[in-house]
Image (cartoon, rainbow, N blue to C red; front, side, top):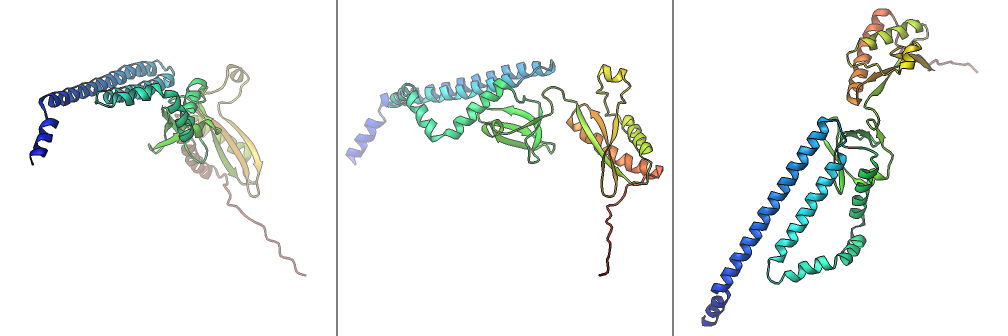
Length: 292
């Protein structure tokens, strides 16, 4: 009992307690400074990003730089806290001095993570898409890019769900970008009418219904307007088995408006065709019976 008490007295000596309190205070101060610095970085970048958004300027670079700076700040703060613990100073120095060896080890053990980081840098530099662009990744995955981090890209789909995609996946596949040059989107309105129906009347009806829609925009060039090209072009695109298929090219301001425009026109065209007596035929098959 005496030996245990003596050990505890030595362990919780006055100098040791002072040292532990000092270490604790330093770690708390570093944590507070780290939290304040990250908060300040977020506020500064938020103002810069909001300013660019109001001016309709691409903000992809700022978002990526913000993520890099925040991750770097966390890393430096973590090493600083380790350095305050007695016996751990050598570890932090080793981590810094052996960065080359660590990078090699990480390269072999975390090739996927490194690939994501490099792909993220390439995407920010070459800009196949930007934050705010509406993209189609295939497989029914479409949405608006909301963030590009070091490891992954976040995309919000039409259901307000977030799709998290590793950067190297996006960097190695074909992507349809609906916003890279202009957000204007063309909606294809495909309708089949009966072979006995008046094709010219059906084409006029499609033009009239499209022009009445409030989401329709005029995407014609000056030359097309001078040449008398209609705002909504309608053409025969196919002779199908039981119908003559028509297509109207209707433009909207963005992909979301184009989808609404298409849905509304399909409804209004069905109602208008019914009133005009224009047949929308059911698929039919001719069966010929032969006697041997």
